[in-house]
Structures are given as structure tokens and as C-alpha cells.
Length: 176
Image (cartoon, rainbow, N blue to C red):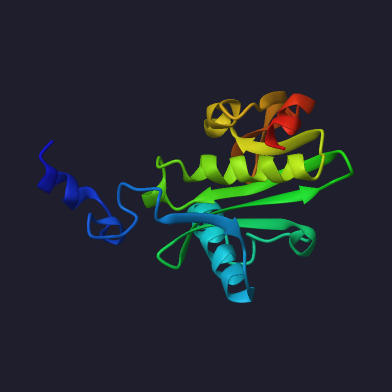
């Protein structure tokens, strides 16, 4: 495929002149830093996870937002990815709402978000992480050490399955 034809198929926000094109080096993965960025993160989450299902704004949030740890991937002052970690007990954490804007997918952003949440889980001495995956994303989570638990089910008319990852003591010590 000729490069000029390729450029026409890339969203305008991600042309070769855009600082994030072909490079993870311009994408920062970090905790949400203020209220405006939290609002931007919720909007990005809605765009990726709820709007395609025809759901209203506000459905991207739940009652656990205030007690959760929110992580964002930011490029050129724009939230392009996000994820959340919530402590369920001293040993168990839940990862939810991993979302990357479509034009930024397949660049390692989701992996970086997950790796950072796993690192934080190690720091908090958690033994197990769990999540609810859309069935089409199962292999992504398997590459990060998660395995399926139970049978697929429908949530919001989308096939999901629970997954978990047992954090090894050796993995925890390797991070130290």
C-alpha cells in the first residue's frame, strides 16, 4: 500500500504530523492529576465503552469512582486511554474500564496501562487481580497473565467473561 493512500485512511487527529503518530514515547501513562482530567477521562471512557452501545452520558460511571485509583494515557494533553484499579480487600483488586480511543489502539497503550496497574497491585501487596473482559479481548488479557474464570455471560448485550491473575510472590519481589 502506498504511503499517501495509508495517510488518507488514518484519522486526521493521528496524521504523521501529530506528535503521537508511530511513537509511544509521546504518550504518558500516569495517575489522573486533577478534576478536569478526571472529567476528560470519563468522557474518553464513555466514547470508547458506552457511546458505541447507544448509551447515555453518565453510564460510564459507577458508585466506586471516588474510592478507585484512575490511570490515564495522555498524548498532547488529550486523554487517549484509561483504566481503573479498585481494592476489594487487602488481597484482592479489581481492574475495570480499560479503554483506548480507536485511533490509538495497537500501539501498546492498553498494555502499558495494564502493566502500570499490575505494578501498583504489587506495591499494595495484592495477591489476586480480577476483571470482567469482553470476550473479544480475552487474548489481550491472557498475554498479561490473566486466565478465564467461569463461563461467558452477557452484560450490556455484550459477551463478557470473568478473568483473574494470581500475583506471584516472586513477581512482587522482582519489582522491588
